[in-house]
Amino acid sequence: MRLFLPLPSALLLACASLSPAQTLIFPNGSVEFADVSITGTDVQRKTGGPKIPASSVARVEFPEPEELAAADDLILKAKYDEAHAKAKTVQDLHRLWKDKPGSWYAPASLLVAESLVRQNKYDEASRLMSELRNMALPPQLQIRVTMLDALEQFQKGITNPALTKVNSVLKSVKDSDTAARLYLLLGAIQFKRESFEEALDAYLHVPVFYGAEAAFLPGADLGAARSLSRLGRFRDAMDSYNRISERYLGTPEADAAKKEKADLEKLAGK
Image 1 (tube, one colour):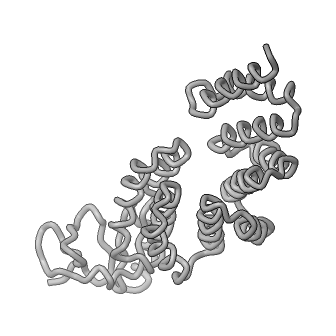
Image 2 (image 1 turned 180 degrees about the vertical axis):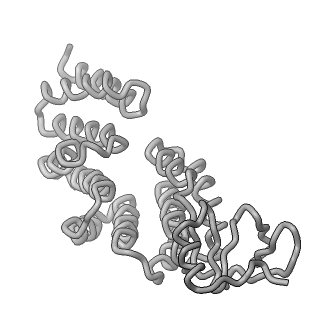
């Protein structure tokens, strides 16, 4: 018995183009993921039949897992443990065909690694990052690997190499999501280096050029307000803190803006 029925090549191509969500494509046929169970590294129809090594999958056709968007959002909210758990569920499943077209293993692994880096769990992250560097990744994901390297250096206080890494990939970024992430990191690096004009410029790039990436606007606006404050532009900083408090009500950035505005008012003797 076989896991699937063999298909003529022309029919297989047609089947692939019309494949339902979550389909495993084998060299001589396809099967819906909902119809199989996973045992170790083998795939088997739920109705019985032989076990087929998952490594024999030629490619997979899965829509982007909801867990990845959720993990990304949780990282922005500094909920790193929850983000790690979400991304790891996808990573563990797609590990079975991690080097096959359509796999979500690498994107999930990047989120797992970022959740670890942001918790300063560098040893755990390092093993995963080494694996990602040795994978054949598309340019966008290669940039994300470089960005994570820079993030780790930044968190360790190694700002000059981190700055070099970010600048090395900025010009080659094609998508606005990755660009917004890079400018946020660039702003944080320049702020830590006390290059506040450069930090302000980096933070302002996000709302000015990548305003459609709404998830990154609160962090960019808060970074810009802090930079204004460090530059002695207190009135501009106060106005920015007010806007953040109102525009992003209920977010960690809004709470931080209220506190920092109050601190600035005390400093000014109000």
